[in-house]
Image 1 (cartoon, one colour):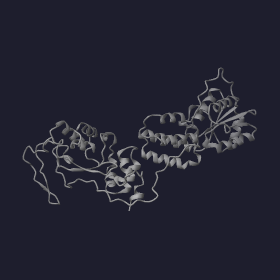
Image 2 (tube, one colour):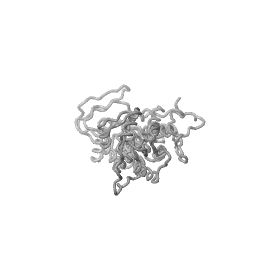
Image 3 (cartoon, one colour):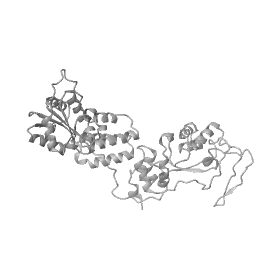
Image 4 (cartoon, one colour):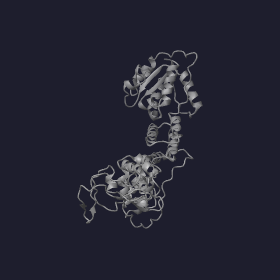
Length: 435
């Protein structure tokens, strides 16, 4: 092949490899063009396409990074569309033929570590065919998926899976060292979202901390939580949330017997305030009449517990909770695990009634008020941490703040250390209040 220009298509993570390969070609008298002097944008892309059309040999570095780079794939497609002679050069870990594009799998690859084979391949390559007339439509400016990722961040709401997928993709771009400033810009945008889950926020902060030297000027880091300069004296430990009458419940005759039929009282801790309210689910609405009635003689004896008190016997026939059969049914469904029924119970019950309190706490499953958001906000996995946080375990409070969804009742409860702090301390409960 006569002395002509060689165009090298490579990902930024393989800069050292392309420098070595271009040195081999230059020793053979070939002019090698790299895009090192160009910046991004349409003008940059137009120059690259022009150089591809003018080259006598298009060298494509075959590696996972190049195959995952939109820019490299677009350059390869355009070289093939303009009838350029393509020389695949393998670098890094071998890529199986089965996952290569057909345009590459049918071409003989040369190992970059064999300079003699590279030289022979370059010399023996056929001359490129004439450019097609008319020229193919130029591909759009590749932004290495940044445009699509930026569009995702413009969505009004992102679920946890979407946030984690986006973070994973941005991490991958950082690993390949492509578009680092753009990736960091998107990480900052992600961090500023109001719906960002706390666990994702922690991971984003870690990525930004690792790449802080590369951050774009003018983009402020997300401020870390402020720790008071002096540790305030710890207030008295909160009263643990527990049933007011710690006694075992007899086997129920209805699905709701576990928490309702045995008259178990639930201590409700209001988020951020530490206010306790007893909720004894023994009857229906306030002023609605008497509590549970036993329509037939009991079939089981009384049960005596350790403190000498007795648990009422279980009736043979079902009993009622109040005078509203619809709310009774929702109470059963809520207690049985239907969180949507808990929300219905909360919204359909009279304000201040025991029905409402039972639905508000998702069937007394946790000492927090969900105000009709059980179906979307209740997470069984946080229940133990809520109990531990309420009992004074500050590490459990910090876990609630860190691991729960942004804006959730769990996060708010953990941020204020289960009511110990009057102001959010945002994950520093153990630091400030552990003895």
